[in-house]
Image 1 (cartoon, rainbow, N blue to C red):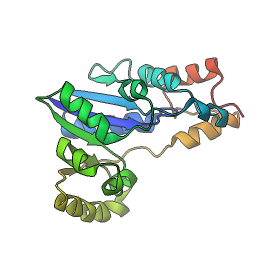
Image 2 (tube, rainbow, N blue to C red):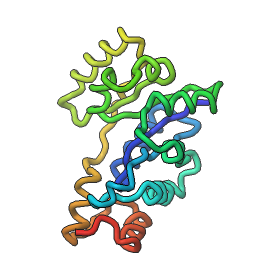
Image 3 (cartoon, helix red, strand yellow):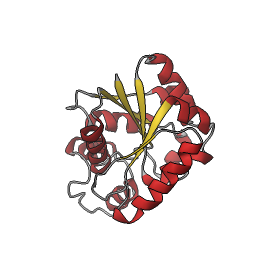
Length: 199
């Protein structure tokens, strides 16, 4: 089984995340995709961040109609810092006969060698990324060559996705501006009903 692994804070999840996931799936044909919100300390609620369970619920709402997507609370249950190497070790044990693909943005891809225990990451999963725009494809290819010398397997998917960030979404909410389709409607309703990201 081919399993895509997509982690992040998802504070909140937005349509750019969803488009990215669909683009990866279209090119790599996954049997299952795991969306894994990272654990964030409840103390960050003071800074206007959503609580871990709220971010998990928003992800579940966003992918309610996607049968191949499973939203996992593996990092929330573990609490503490959400290290990718630890998560991949757990998933490798859960899916011993599967091929794991770690889905990353360009910035994360370019810093993977500095993450905790990168050799474990490279051993357990192929690393997939996309260019932010046409301008950085060469930099990604050069970095992929470097990661190969460290034992990594890489995929640079040739896709373009919408430009939107969780920061932009939070800023618009706090300013009382419409989200204009930046998040799924169910997620927008959840944010409103729960008073998330107050000004």
